[in-house]
Image (cartoon, rainbow, N blue to C red):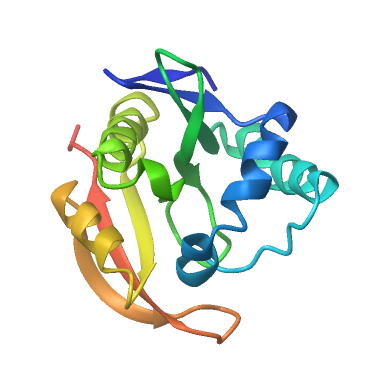
Length: 172
């Protein structure tokens, strides 16, 4: 997976060097509220998360989550990418940014570039997204990106209801 560049961001494939950043992001209150607790409490846990999640996804599917870095400074600001969840029939886009980088259009910039890459370069016929009902900011962003709400469904662990959004790739 090669980097994706936007005017302000570089989406880098996630690697073990990103463990300190991911340790912080995965323990942000907004992540815990809207995504869920991944049990990452140490650098070792963060490395395991990266190895078994984003890195394994790239190896298995050719896509995964990347770190969104500032093009000028190289500072990690958030994450964005595609993953294939066992309970979904198409890849799922996800994004999260540190609180101090929210409200600047960075998530939109990263997600738009990721969608374009997935639909036009990877030729994925359909990309999904899920959110919790209370995550209004993500719902607004997904709609702005052109994804359409399809239905509610229970998360496989039974802990919550999710909203499913989808976008189709261009017809060949």
